[in-house]
Amino acid sequence: MNEINYISIEFLNSFTGGVFITNLITHFIKDYFPKSLDKKISTLIVAFIVTLTSNIIMKGISFSLVYLSTINSFLVAAAAMGNYDLLTKRMRKGNGDNYIKN
Image 1 (cartoon, rainbow, N blue to C red):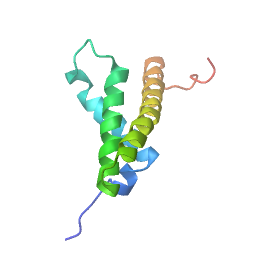
Image 2 (cartoon, rainbow, N blue to C red):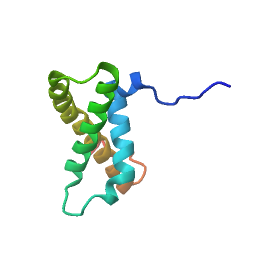
Image 3 (cartoon, rainbow, N blue to C red):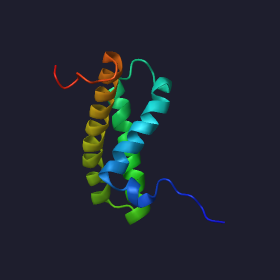
């Protein structure tokens, strides 16, 4: 029987995969974080965990890997937050046809 893998570790180790998984996980767990914790911080935490674990699986652990994963998690979190803002603004306005005109 063939296994179906929708997401591979190679995809997770890419920028696009990191942003996608960060968006997906954050969407499902955002209500379980304390209300006092900003959504941006929770997104950064998820991005750090996703980035670090995918790098550890691919390359093992080292100090430089943890350092680079920390820096990369800020980029992944920024892109994930940008996607979230774009989607929520479009949903508030309707279909989003005039989103760019504003």
